[in-house]
Each structure stands twice: as structure tokens, then as C-alpha cells.
Length: 285
Image (cartoon, rainbow, N blue to C red):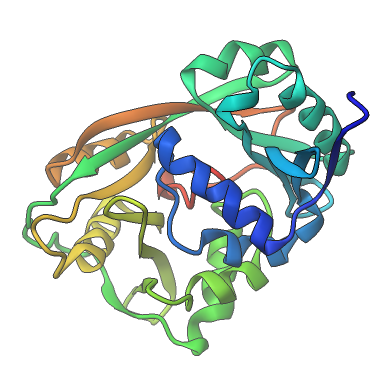
């Protein structure tokens, strides 16, 4: 490593600079995503500095003693091919020691991650477009606004769909400025799904969208997309191993705009994959 290069924990202002780079990369993160994620594990957000200027970044968010998610691995275009990205990677990975690591690899980096010991699991396919209106399906359940009363139940539901418990994160994600959250309830008032829509650099994004059934997922999608201006594109990242999720996106008139590959360093904790109709984010898990 060069003597004038160092890797250290990022401040909030540092990370804002990193996020600004992603517009040119086409990542399209949601506004304020990092403000919701950073409190989960501030030490997992790292930047590399060359002569005091930020030139690289990598996040390795430790969600639990068993699971971490790696994202935002990028180098400023002016410094690519110099080895600074690899140096940042090597400095960041020890933060996840002893944990299974998940990540989403763009096609150009997939082989690099395989050589680093990661195994492909499925693709996350981004579907984008102006959603059409569909009639409600029978037996979907009741969609309502999320209140503080629902937080514990939503967190318990989420733990079945995500490889770690994230109650504190959800308390921020569900209530963040410009986020709209909806919960799906059965006739007994039990949570059977939930979803969130938020503004992004380009259009809006839904994530996550978790539901017990395709009908329930469709009801949540309709509620989250209702009232969007016709010129605002909506995107969601659909796991390719859930055929019902793909069918839902296509039925609402969305088309594939990009894809990446979800990969793991070891078998991850089990989840209810067929309840995952859209991931929370590609950048942070």
C-alpha cells in the first residue's frame, strides 16, 4: 500500500461524497439510504484516502454475529487500475470476520468475486417502468399504513425474509423522510407482508417488498405505486429464484433494465425466499 494512501471509517459527509459518485455508475440508490443504514454499523463504512482526498470506498455492514453485507465497493474513475480498490477491499473484509458475507455483483465483477471465494446464488433483476393498474386479487389481505404499533410484528416478519434481525434499522427505514411504508394484514390482524417505496436519484424504488402470497405482494405493490406521476419511473429489484415475483413485475408492465448476481462467501442463514418479491437495496442488503 502506498504511504500516502490510508483506509478508515467514513464520516456521514464522507459517505455523501461516495454516494454522489454512484449517479455516474447508474446505481440509483434511494435518497437518504445511508442515513438509515449507517447507524446499524458505522464502522462498516470505509473510505480510502490518497493525499487526504477520498478515492475509494467499501461498506461491510455487520448485521449480526453471523451475517454481513458488502457493498459500495468502488474507486473514483481517476484512480482505477492503480491497486487502490484491492487495498480498500483487503482493509474492509476483516470487519466481517467470522460472518457469512453477501454481496450483489455487477456482471463485469462477477468473476472477480468468484476468484475471491464467493458463490453465485441467484440474480437480482431490476425491473423499471410506469406501472399499470391491475384489479385486486381475491384473498390478498388488507393493506394499511404502518404505525408504531406494527413495528415489532413487521420486524419479526422481516427476520424470516432477511438473513439477520434488523429491528433498529426498520424503525428508521419505515419512518424516514419521503419513505412510504405499507403493511399487509390477514383477517386476524397478523402481518403477512410489508413494503416501502422511496425517491431515488432517478424515479422511485420499492424495497423491500415481502409477502406471503403473490396476491398479497400485488396488493402491496398497487398501494405503494398508487398516485405516482405518470412521468416518474418505478424500479424494484426482483430475485430471479422467485418466479412469482418476476411474473408480478411483468404483469404490472415493468421491464428488465439491469441485473446483478447475489453471491455469498458461505451458505447464508435460511430465509423464506418465496416471500421476497423485491430486495431492500442492492448496495446495502
